[in-house]
Length: 164
Image 1 (cartoon, rainbow, N blue to C red):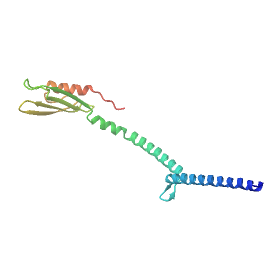
Image 2: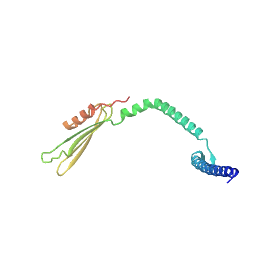
Image 3: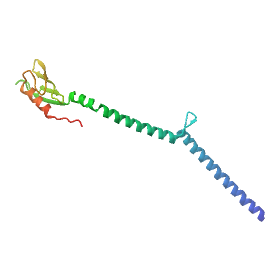
C-alpha cells in the first residue's frame, strides 16, 4: 500500500468515526428535545416555561396578600364567632343508683368562652333512663343543679381557651 493509500484509509476511518459520533449526538439531541417538548409544549403550542413559573409565583404572592387582607378584616368577627362557639366541655360520669354499676350515668357541660351553654344529664337505671338539659348563663343555671352537673360546669369553666 502506498502512502497516498494509507492516508486515504486513515481519512476514511476518521470520517466513519466522525459520522458515527455525529449520529450518536443527533439521536441524543432528539431525545432531549422530545423530553423538553413535554415540559415546554402544551397542545402543540410553545409555552414559555420560565414565564409561566413567574406568573404562578406572582399569583401565589397576590393570593397571600389577599389572604392577609381578609384575615385582618375578618379577625374581629372571627373572634366573636369563637367566643360564642362551644369551646369548654366538662364531663362527669357517675353511678346514679346503687344497683347499677359501670358509671353509666353522666353530666356534660357544653359552654362557650363566656360560660354560656347547656348542661346535659343522663341518668340510667336498670329499667329506665332519663335525660335532662338545663341552660347555663355565665356558669350558672336558673334551675337547681345536681352535684354532678355543678362539677361538669366547673370542669368546663376550668378549661381556659385563648384566641390570639
